[in-house]
Length: 308
Length: 268
Image (cartoon, rainbow over all chains, first blue to last red; front, side):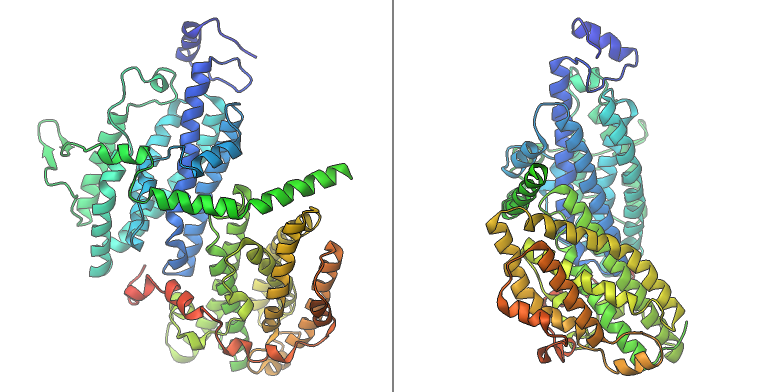
């Protein structure tokens, strides 16, 4: 077990490329911040899976249904791994995290507080939203000084890369498909563009401890700007219109500039007051309560078996 | 691409529709299992069942193609037929909105699948025999999954939990009869070696398997269930099960068609 004399000593360790492991006597500030971040990530993976479940039964093909099931299975699998990483930090148990999430006490990514209204929304999530989440996760993986999180992120980033390629295929299918399909995606883009941009969050606090401790490797605004530079021309290239009247290309800076971002919708989601937050959380909570008997029975069976 | 007899097609469509409906029904549980590991497991099972449906539908559609030059995309055949043209059984179609029903149906259905794939493993159609061997390898895990849950709940000593699954068995087991409603011209399919065992014969074995499981788990099922399981032949009520759609099927099919029917000519 490694220990540090104070936060300056710990910072030197981090600055020299150190990786913290669960059995280290890490500073409590670091433990709490990393736990909070991993718990938020785990909650988001789980609620992301629930966001996509509405349209999977209606997938317009059996192979597509298999693919979207596999994708959602990956997301729930990521949540599973992340909850274990978080639980090992000794702050909350996995059940406590899940029960707090389903009771509306915890936070998860803004994009998963919105409802997928049509199949094209499913595609928008698979492409726009996953790309935003992928960029964030990759930037965390790049440095990530907490060992168990970094190892789990390696797998998550690899799987999300597959999701993204599939999302792009799905986007191309709608973009190059019938007039109805093109128009469906345009409508979905109008619903999902801003939430996807807002996912990166407002500009980072200069004193963000997660940056200082190299859990995050990039500032929010850096990632957000890079996302906009990539996706504006890509979506326009497919003939879609970005829902931003003030969007312009700055010739001098050679970059796309959006209108001023309204952060109120993001703030609403962070207090579970987004457009679909109530239903999403209530469905999950009802199901968790309805299936409590299974968990209880399995626990009882384990106790009986151990006693025998 | 090979042209299949009417009897063979009828047999394939019934099994493919069962696999499609069970996979589609399992799909509705994604993210709603009792805990995360179970979500992951049940989701895999749903994907496997849909994969079996795809493999069987491919044989059907390939046969149509060879006989009529009409290339029918699998998804059109799987999703866009009128409700009356489906040949799935009631057990596969049932909604099973409570987790105990989804579990009991999974156990009953996968117990039957073991017999059904075995009856195709030596099929005179080599492509079908290969699908049967591959599918049965997956089904071993499905049965282990169902067995694990059923036996652990049964051994929990938790009376209310045991009552929940026992009640599900009482309600769903009679629907299982429909699994053995023989597809049209089954005797011809047997005569040509397409399938090697009759539905009636499999029904008898299935009932024995189910009875043994119930006894092994010491589940307190009612007398009528015990009598039913002791009857060798399927009950008369099973005949015609595949020709009539169960309650709620039309609504379910409409939901499955929600996207593809927006533009059936489009590629999705």
